[in-house]
Image (cartoon, rainbow, N blue to C red; front, side):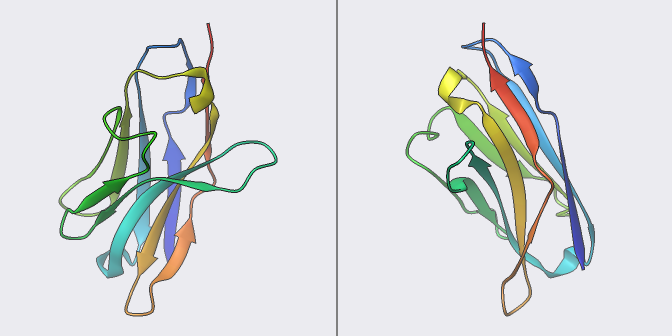
Length: 117
């Protein structure tokens, strides 16, 4: 019912910045919350940040102060502004959305972020 497509990943030097985008289509009016996760090779997908339909945000501890999650008013675009990037931020980043009263979860395909000099 909802399709999510991440973009904006790429190669950036340590200390640099990068903004990820997630375009949502379909039943976007049913989205309750959206978020960003990341996954290292061979590791579990981990929370980066979430934002509710009302705009409340939370962040994983390692991202707080460096990353900022936001969305547009229409609710069909999610962003992750990443600053002061570190090599350990290298991962595949995924956006997700929770829909409807049952909080059905949808995932994007992921976008690779590589932080290297």
